[in-house]
Image (tube, rainbow, N blue to C red; front, side, top):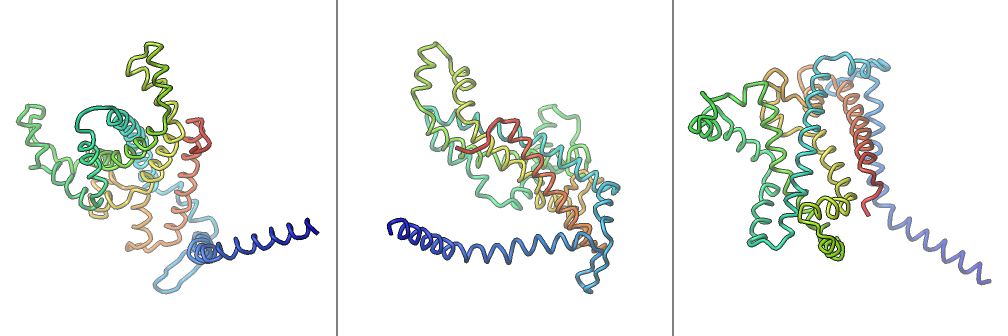
Length: 301
């Protein structure tokens, strides 16, 4: 009798759990899973959503990804972006968090000031950096006055510098967010580890390398994954910077921007844009998985 009542209670609890989860399951099923299935369907077709034209073309959209010149340029640009931005923003955020976690004067004020870029919209930050790096902007004037440059450089229209300007902007705007995550994690590092390091005669740098960094390894994995996903999806900054063209000379063309141009541009190649989106998802998953394994951490806790 006792086993029967226990089994009945478990069954009742399971029904309750499913009932509580059902609204979320329905919403996810309608707005997420159905969208993914429809996207997969579109990726095998030549599509014009305005006229309702669908033509099955098999794997042609996926084959085009490997032969299209602009797609290759976009992936090269975004891989370069990830390779530069993600390590720098992670290292800078960790170092700043470690410094602000000490007993330096005015650390609360510094935390507030450093976090301000996170509260500013991406569009506004892009416009600010475009002004700073414009031909007659402050950066050029300061560099020329200090004899660092013989003449002003048109950073915005120079293919050698355009993407680097967006990189610097992205690093400056994302470091405060990751710094805050590291600061929260640093509160959980046992003080006894630092006291033991003091007994062993370790200086501040050694305590950072051998105590702080290993203890924050799971958080570093999280920061790396967030950074990788965010940089691969970078769209608005490149769109505003180039006016949607990906210029100059495709130097700021990202995969997300290319997807937008194919989906809603004059070519209206929605099928190819959808295939490109799916390929981007696969690349993000693979790169994130590799980053997680290289950091030798499988969980956040």
